[in-house]
Image (cartoon, rainbow, N blue to C red; front, side, top):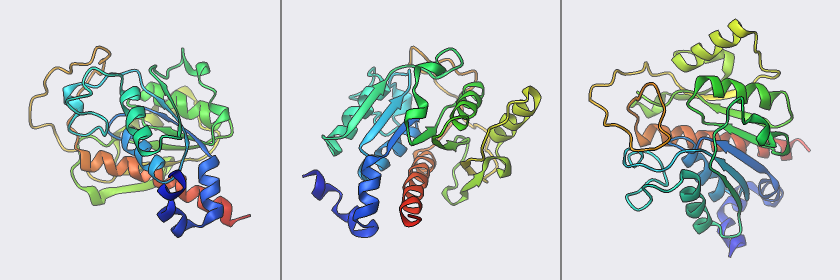
Amino acid sequence: MVNSLFNRTELLLGKDVMESIRSKSVIIFGVGGVGSWCAECLIREGIEHITLVDSDVVCITNCNRQLMATTKTIGEPKVEALRQRLLEINPEADILALQKSYNEETKNDFDIETYDYVIDAIDSLRDKISLIIKTLSDSPTLFSSMGAALRINPIKVQVSEFWEVKGDPLAAAMRSAMRKHKLFPARKFLCVHSEETPLPNRGTALLDGSATFNKTQTNGSLAHVTGIFGMTLAGLVIQDICQQVESL
C-alpha cells in the first residue's frame, strides 16, 4: 500500500529521488499554523522519518489555521494530534512526537546533528536565533519561517536568504539581535517570508485557552497564508533532495 501511496510522486521525480526522499530525516520545531502544514506535505511526498517538537496543546483558537486542530482534538498535545493525522496518511512512517520546547536550556536534548533537515517554525525570537545558530554549526540543512501573521496576500510569499529578507519585522529584529550579541550563523540559509506589509489587528483577541500560552502579543493569522509558508518549507526540502540526487 505504501509503495502505491507515492506512485504519483515517483512518477514525477523518479525512483532514485524517491528512494532518497524516503531515507531523509526531518525535525520540525513548532507545529502550529506553519509547521503543521509543512509536516503533512512532507509525509504526503514521501518523507518517512519526522520528529515533531512543540510544547503546546490544541485550543479552539488554533482551529482557524493549524492542520490538526479541530473541535475533536482540543486539549490534546499538538504533536500527538498531528502524529496521529500523519500516521493515517502513511501508517509505516517513523514519526516521533516530542511535547517540549526548544530553548537555551533544552537545546542539547535534541540530537540535531543526526537529522538531514531542520525546519524552524518557532515564534520566539530568542529561541529562533538559538536554534539557527546551533543548527548551522552542525551539518543539517536549515529552512526557516519568518512572520506569517498579519498577512492576507498569498502571492506575496517569497523565499530569500536570511540576510536578504526585506519587509519582515521578525527578520529585522533577529538580525539586529544577532549583531548586538555577535551571534552569527556559520552558514547562509533560506527563509520563507512575505513581502506584504504587516496589517494591523482590527479586532479583539480572545484569551487563548492553552495552558502553555505565554506569548506577549497575539496577532491575527489566516490558514491560506500560514499553509503556503509551511508547504513552501516542505518544497524547499524536496527540491534540495532532488538537486542532490541530480548532482551525483
